[in-house]
Image (cartoon, rainbow, N blue to C red):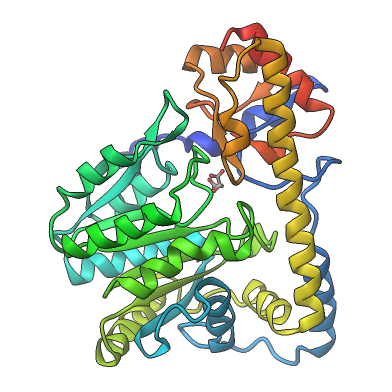
Length: 394
Ligand code: LMR
């Protein structure tokens, strides 16, 4: 049997982590995988999560199974955080998932069950893992234009043109905020036009939201998702707690389905729970429980919100200092987009040869499309990176 297997292509993002670890240079800079790092280069356990963990250790009396869909209190806590009162609860189905990726996977399997002919439309570019997940579950893929590398912004006209070609029942994948890999995001009026066009085309939006609180704040970052949830008859929302709660390895996420009515909600709910069952039975609970505790305890929630805001502001200030440092070195404002972008990522606009030079000559690691993780920087590495970018002639 095993002789039939072929070598799988390495994940572009994860392979960088191995290359970085193997590099003996002490002044190397890791701007690869999207993990938040503080000024000391660490990915700390957030203060409120640490306290919740202590409380849980004292109070937890059993580790017996929860439910196939996960804990309803977790559904409620994330739904409130993400949607506020934007969606009618009687139309919402929810299952806890194995991280945000697990939510995407269950979402795509649900699409395949309901409409195997559907094409999944993804922005160009998108998070590289979106493509193999859709292919793996057997769905067709198409791209809509999104990023304009000339302006460093969204090419909204081209995006709308492409969305005009989407067929009824197709899935339109949208990044809820902090677009990965570009950092270029839709404005609220643009979200409004997207809601209108997907509804007109009878397509179903699938929102991947993994960075709520990393861009313009918890409320602002959810505004596009709320608009879709309140305006579209059907939608799927895959939400991740990895980044904004700093619990990457706990694999905590939620899949929400906005359905037309309560009867369809019940059917969707049963299908989503069944998909959990056939994939892994019960979703992981530890991270979901911590998140629920943090969101429902006013003191823990205040502490979490404050720390998340510190994280967000530190990324914004790194963006500004990198844009300033590059302005000083290049005498131009062509990297000004770095300060306009939001979230963990931006694309520098370097060629793959330049990305390689940055890695080999300067010890700067970034994804091959020149995506940088802003949170991999700190006050002392910003000027080093700016020197390396200028020396490479980007
Ligand atoms: C990233 O884009 O770097 C993160 O979402 C981590 C991952 O799993 O790729």
